Image (tube, rainbow, N blue to C red):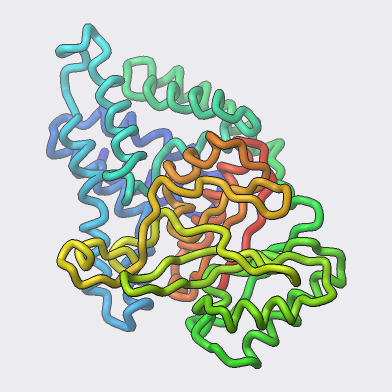
Length: 384
């Protein structure tokens, strides 16, 4: 029964509805109530696998294959979450910790699954609920949520559940979405898997026309999805500079930069006077993009991971927190950037491969929650 409850917790909490995130606060209680280490592992697996249930279908779409490889990656991705929580579970609340055994152990599990290396697949972290429970509280809201999670593994969990439930109801009743910064616009596209793969003048011309139209309507910064500009070359840069000539607009768009060692998934900033690489992705999607074993074996290739670089970047005089696709599902890239006080969150993605899943909805909900926690405007642009 407790395993089924954890499955429901992961499924409901990570449904793609931002207001459902507080359901995930029940997971620590289910973990603590597990009668054995094996059940604790099953509870952790049930929560994580149900939260990431879209992965098998997404992998099948990406590789044009059956669900077999997707299920394999799905289970592999859950290992770090399950192993950490199973290893740190204890039936004895006070053993070795003067009565605070479980809270200390759960805190360790939460930190380990939120930070690299375990946090590289650290999706579905309950801390994401902070933005719903404590909108606008910033770091204090994060600490309050962490404290609530720790109380949920103690005998005082009923009181914590009642208190958190009250905060949840109040937030739901008064909820408003994050704002859009003045003069900024995110443009969603529907190019499917052809986005960025068409290098023709017609393709880029159509995107330039979209940007020019937005500029004519008053937008000063236009954000396009991940990979929108394809391979970033001097020719493409010149084409875009010329296309924006005479327009007071800056384009922030996704592209790929290739070298002999692999490639970088980047955001570029383009206006009539310059075209520069703005941001290099800190954490590309493991396996499908980030393949570190290729470099370890001297083969090269795959996307590069800049784990602790370029936490914030500037567009004009505005400091932004960039989040590309997979980074939106993790805790540490968001908090790493928040340490540098960004003024705007810019989230992009190329989600054509997520057809038939709730992955994009979950990404948008996650970004929305973090934006509300730190009271920041957010700009999103996705391709489907």
